[in-house]
Image 1: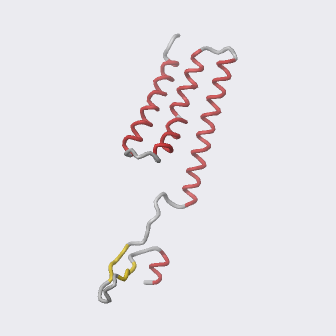
Image 2: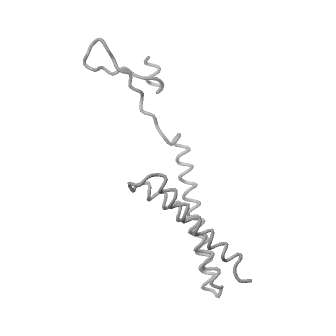
Image 3: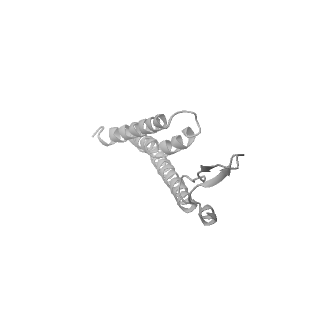
Length: 125
């Protein structure tokens, strides 16, 4: 039993005050995976956010340097497709709404970004 407790497997006995019975209580389980995987996912999220913001800044500079309005709309669409949903999922996880609504909101923002990008791609020719 000691080996099972230190390895984190199986229930442990909890004394209830009655010397004739113990109640099995499961050990606390960790969600999210190993710390290395969680760190890797967090770093990947930060890199993806930084790259999408860098691309948006480059498109904005191109727009200011004489590019058409399409460049500005394309940059806005890319930010709505990549950066904003990631930030929304993070922020909305701390708001008391259901997980389905978090995904609906984030997906709606992604859809808006795709519509903007498609409007630039298939717009005036």
